[in-house]
Length: 416
Image (tube, rainbow, N blue to C red; front, side, top):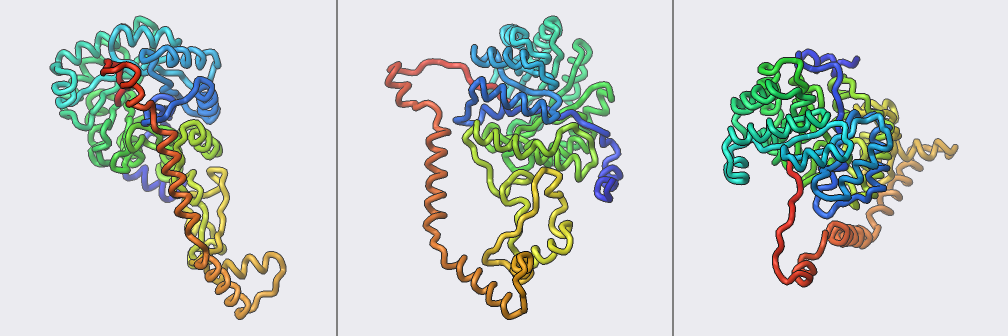
């Protein structure tokens, strides 16, 4: 155990020894605008996630379409180690679809904030609780393990959250209670307090979990804050794929649990790069080179000061070890390189290196880099933007209007 993880346990007395990792790539990830997976891709990703050690898969919304239902049924036939979960509203038809999908468990979601209840659904909190209870009881009757998802929990009255949770648990056995930061508006202190309030009210027999969105870039931080407060399950997606700015990223959360908190999670870190690449291919959404853990540049170094220190001890600028994620440290010759890397490269192939030669070689490298034509950079940027406009375009609304000559009602995507 490192000094960092020992300090984490000291600062977070409610830190659990282990957490369940629930992946939502197949459901919330696919809800990213313009993204869709084929059934074959879903089965391949489900298998890879299960093999990587993910505890459960939020695998789809079977009530939304026949293809979603069939994909979950096909997933069931794979006999994966991971539990297969369906997402559903607490409505009879949704619960029936979840049961028909052969899911092991269900994530029943209902808004809990006054804004969503009044302005979106037009119902009272009491009515929402009644609907929630009815759906949970129906799911239990179908033999599904029940996860209650408090949508928009972070914009809800904290006391009302506790009261609702206590009331529902009195009638329905809960697999987990999931608190969703649906609009990504929480920050770590808020998340910590919300988990503590519910943990104190519900006791250790209820597994608390969070579902965090990344609108302010805090999804992974909020997830770790929840674990620090005692949450024993987390949800995330590969590459953080999801609605708007996405969700808590699987690789980031797993890295934080391991190296910052010392919490067990069961996910194989060596699987993270291949999972990231697979979701990039299937989704059409490329990740940034500087994306933590799996990004192309994460373990690459150019700065002369950094490289000099890294050559002496890799811990100098890599607290997260490259080998942990199946990566290796790399050194890049560029404008900001120093003499240490030039000397290292030449000496490695037996070239005698005095100070004058190294200085001349470094000048050559810098001059060559700075004289490169940046037209390639501009073209790559334009190509990437064009790719997104094409791959993430969805269905042409003008074509829809032309086909039907007027608006038609259609079912929306699931929230959370």
